[in-house]
Length: 226
Image (tube, rainbow, N blue to C red; front, side, top):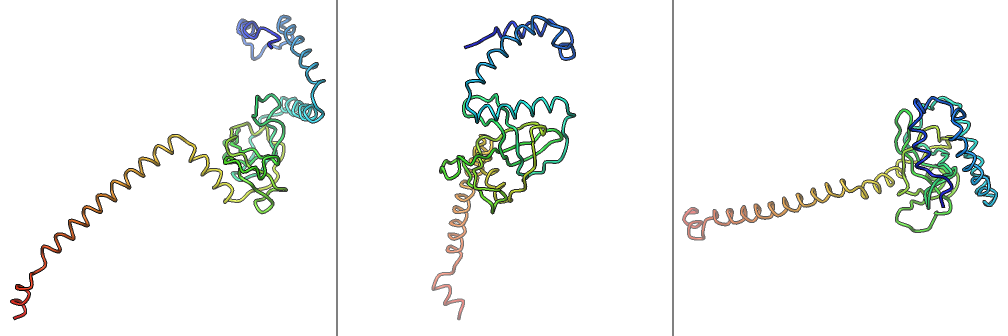
């Protein structure tokens, strides 16, 4: 159920020149929409579970705090186990709230992460990689390899530790094997290997035939020995 007309809100924003710089309170129409949606949000939040509301409060506080800070350009090396705020506005089974995540890559402002969940540990799903203290984690958990995503480094709450190259290799192998282009190239290489093996077999047979043909007969061998 929609509580406001999203098209009207978008059109209103487009009509305002320099809308990324103009303060929202200068637009009464927009503030009216804001009051309606916040009223609905407030009613929904009062019906949430203790767990969900607590997580949402923490995520909102992190969001407000981040709006007052400069973009984070710090170092989150590949292999880091970071506590990441995955947001509270996710849909369906998307990861939400604050979770440990494995950092797979970084740019100046962004990191590529694989989220972790203790609830998924030992569930035997193909996309789940079980890890524990031997892999650098505080407790047994599962890396959800099909939920990888890029996000801003500003979502990092803390760096908890570092995982092993073995864990990184398994995650990255999974990602490669589920990449369409990689599977296409892999099949092309397999076809090429198969073709070359058949060619090798033909050449070996041809060489064997030539060697057999070039061998002297018993009569010629006797004559040569005399």
